[in-house]
Amino acid sequence: DPTFIKCMRYFLTTYLPIVRKRSDNTVNNYKDAIKLYIQWLKEEKKKPLESICANDFIQENVVSFLNWLKVNRECCATTINQRLSHIKSFCRYLINTHPEYLPIVGEVLNIGDYVDERKENFVWLTIEQMNMLLNLPDRTKRTGLRDFFFLSLIYDSGCRESEILNLK
Image 1 (cartoon, one colour):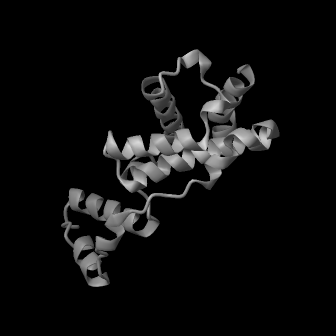
Image 2 (cartoon, helix red, strand yellow):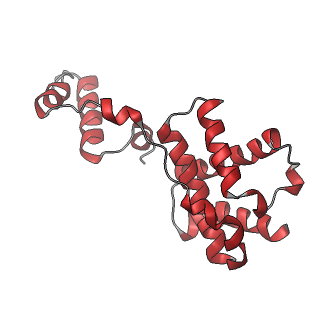
């Protein structure tokens, strides 16, 4: 399906980075999710690469793919939900740009997120504990000042370590 392949290419190379102004890391995450799904189609569904089309982005396949992530790759709920989110975004894009794909990929949008059991056992730091952590670096030394700044920036911004390291 040449239209489908053009849509996928445009979504990943133009729509996400240019139209939606997503970061390189975000675009790479989308690419990884879609590549992994295509790899799953090739290996588990025995689908040749050249025959992959919109008909492969159906609810039944995506649910099986998510289960495969959980069982075979032992992914946690947050990883599975992120992959699902990226696939849903692509399906939403397909529907918005080519409404004829709605009957095919529309049901993917109804797939619910996996529940993250780790949230029940998650322990948040208290204000006192966070202050203690921020006061650990020896700010009289250059490396201690650097570490304090890094910890403070992560804490104040809510960014991940990789996002901070990619700042220019």
